[in-house]
Image 1: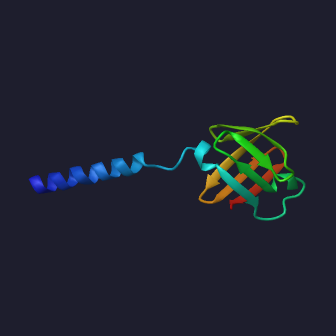
Image 2: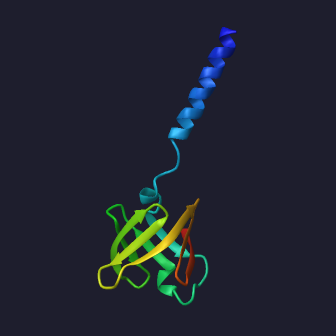
Image 3: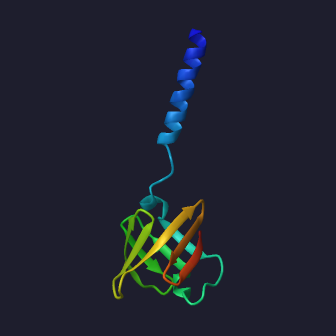
Length: 109
């Protein structure tokens, strides 16, 4: 009986520890360079993004700014343009951006 109880306790601890080691927060998961899987028209400027750990980004055209994540919303606050906010989803090495007339799929490089 004690052996079964000990095994059950160890199993529960293992599950709890694995749950605590879940995926990276979105702020960390988005860090890196992402490129379109296909040529997305009319938003071809969105076909390459590099996000850094300091909260900065640069797009395909070289336009840069700050990015902010709130839940599943990604705000791109450009240095020289109005900010845009899109919904984003990261699954494995794929990043999908959707919003008002925007649907862009990118792959981590």
